[in-house]
Every structure is written in structure tokens, then in C-alpha cells.
Length: 248
Image (cartoon, rainbow, N blue to C red):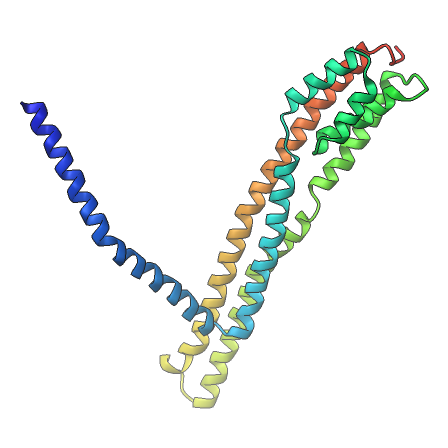
């Protein structure tokens, strides 16, 4: 009986909680609308002309971030499975099929593997040193592709707070201009310029923080792909050593 009463109490509590959640939903929506309205108001108060520069930095920075995230996500493959299938083809002497498989597979691992397979398929019997140098050169090229456009992201990360600090200086100048015109240093006179100074700084820092989070995520994906290339390079050297087309 005690267990039955406990279950009934839990159900009642859940029902009461669900009712409260339904009643609280309109309040949460109103609060969200209020937050967005306040952000819009503060954005305008910061000076629409100057704050537009901060907004442009955010939009362009996010565009580069999204491009990198999509590119790096599409470049990821199951490296171990790919190398296993490639090793089976090489063991069977099907180098042409291995090259075709590399061409039909996206990502830097496949491109590095294609260079190694082309060395094996060449008329000259390449030694393991030549193949290793070819793999390393292609890995460097693919690493450059992975880091493409990252310099633009770092630029906007640095630019956003700089624009905010520039807005701070402009706001202070406005405050002193107001003091000069009014001949008074009361809080009412300087409030407008100080508000512009603080708002632009806040938005600049927020933009930099958002872009920094994306940038760190991009760096983690680049490191993962680089690690996959190193793993694949080792597997490729083992394949080449075992192949009859590699000069020992």
C-alpha cells in the first residue's frame, strides 16, 4: 500500500508540474520576446551606423566558420575501414581499383592515399623512401587546404572587440562634446555618450566570443583530420612494403 500511495503521489506531482509548465510557457515566450526587443533597442542605442560594422564582422565571421565546419565535416571518413579496404585491393594487386576508390572518396586521407597508390602504379618501381616523401608532401598540401580561410576567422575575432573599443573611444568623445556644449558635467549630460561607449564594447566582445567558440571547434576538427592522415600514412607505408610493386 505504501508503494501504491507513493506512485499516486509521484503521478500527481508530475501532473501538477506539467500544468505549471503549460501555464509558464506564455511567460517564457514573453520573456524571450522581451530579451530580443531589449537587444534590438540596445543595438540601436549603440549607434546603428557604427554597430552595423560589428554586425558585419559577426555575419562574415559566421559565414567563414560555417563554410569551414561544412568542409571539414564532409572531409571526415572512417579511416580504418577505408585503409582496410585499400589494403585488400593492394594485396590482390588491384592498384588501379585502389586508385579509383581513392578518387571516389572525399577527404584528405583519400587524396594522400591516391598519391601513394599512383606511386605503386607507375612504371618505375619506386622505393619506400620515395613513396614516403610523396605521402608527406601531399599531407602538407592537404593540411593547407584544411586550414584555408581560418586566417579570416581570426581576423574577425580580433576585429570585433577592436571595433567595440573604438566605439568606446567614440562614445567618450561624444560625452566630452556634450559636456562642452552644455558647460556642465552632470550625469544627464554624459549619459548618452557613456551608453554608446559601453554598448559597443559589450556587443564587440559578444561577437568575438561567439566566433572564438566556432574557431576552437574548427581547430579540433582539423586536429582530428590531421591525426587521421598520420594514421593513414603509416598504414600506406605498410601496404607499400608488402606490395610486389615497391622496390625494397
